[in-house]
Length: 153
Image (tube, rainbow, N blue to C red; front, side, top):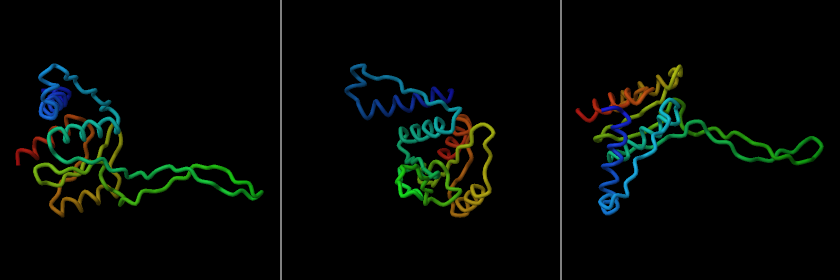
């Protein structure tokens, strides 16, 4: 079964349980497949799949956020500016925090030529020493290899 088929099957099973009458009456539509060749798309793909399979999955915002601010100029004029507020999340925290079969699973998304940073490698050691799982995933196939390894434990 391809990753796309696994994704669609998980959604259909979830929909069948969540909305049995609608499913029975033929109101089921297949889910839109995220663009898994981007970090955002692959993160969405994984979080959706895990949620549909009755696991806990949360996307972690580690980059901070952009907010509107006001800055006073030397002339006394006030000018609207965008300010970057850094995240309070510890550096190296994975993009996805999940629980699968009672195991803490942290998934850091690395698509294309993106490589792990030293703080992410340190966090991986910290998570593993605590008994959890922390892996770097770059494709749906890599995710499903990890997933089926975890659920078969």
